[in-house]
Length: 145
Length: 145
DNA sequence: CCTTGACATAAAGTTAGGTTTAGGAATTAC
DNA sequence: GTAATTCCTAAACCTAACTTTATGTCAAGG
Image 1 (tube, rainbow over the protein chains, first blue to last red):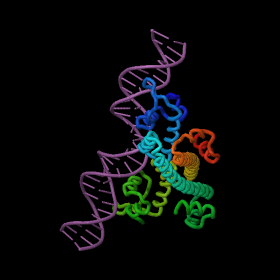
Image 2: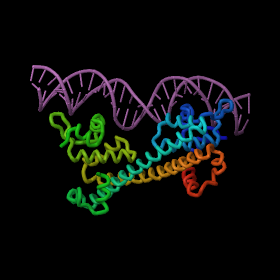
Image 3: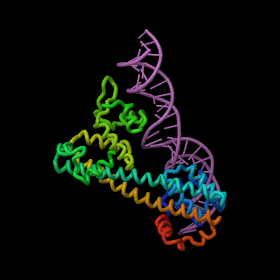
Image 4: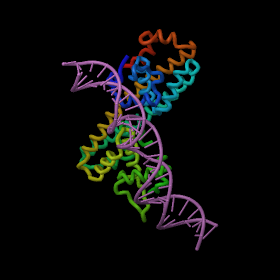
């Protein structure tokens, strides 16, 4: 069993955030001893799931819905599985977008590296948009398509 | 040359957002004809960079700083390059985190798939935390480390 | 001419996800 | 026993990035 301060340390989250999550119903049925929250392994796993779902783009109230399903029991296994499947495809799509972002960033790094060497952007402007070195052209095309 | 409405269509962004970006100084020196914004290829590329930098986690005012550097000329090439290098490492780190998120999501999908088949979580609880099938164990370990 | 539609501005409003503040209560350290 | 920590709640506050509203201009079609 952990106090809110210990969990705050473990997860590097402000105490106020943990209290906020609790107030929003993300730790249903958490124990208390004379008013003081007692975080068990169940709450720690809940917190891991909260961080995961948040990162997947889910809102707090939808995470609360998931936590309610957990309380409801075995009848909600399909709902819970469906939720994770949906988040999975959203995160996969997000990674594709991030790769495109990374391609743009790599292109811009090359661009300014070249500009620094040349002292201007004249040669670069002549290479744009389709006479770039092959590997750079790939980055550019993926970032601009 | 494009009107704000055309650009809104092309980038699937609300007109209000484009005006907001302009007000925040993200299109320095954009042309106008009797008050009406004229978006040129320069502004379209600016918009691509805005979307890229935003996705990399940069705030609007920092993007404005970048746009100011672009106006300043060749002396800011190193600043601009440095900015993109920094964003690059941030996006790479973000992708590692997203992969961890994806591992958690994949683990949970397997978990509930198994729970549905078993009708309960008893067998699962016996396998946790280190007697999972090898490929699932990897997901679990990466998501919980 | 007058209505429609796309453009403009300034300023107020919105939203999510916290964070801070004010005022206590209880536990721990010495 | 008292001083310092750590905990509690309710409610106000904050921030970024838009969005909405109110009001107005201007060009083209009927």
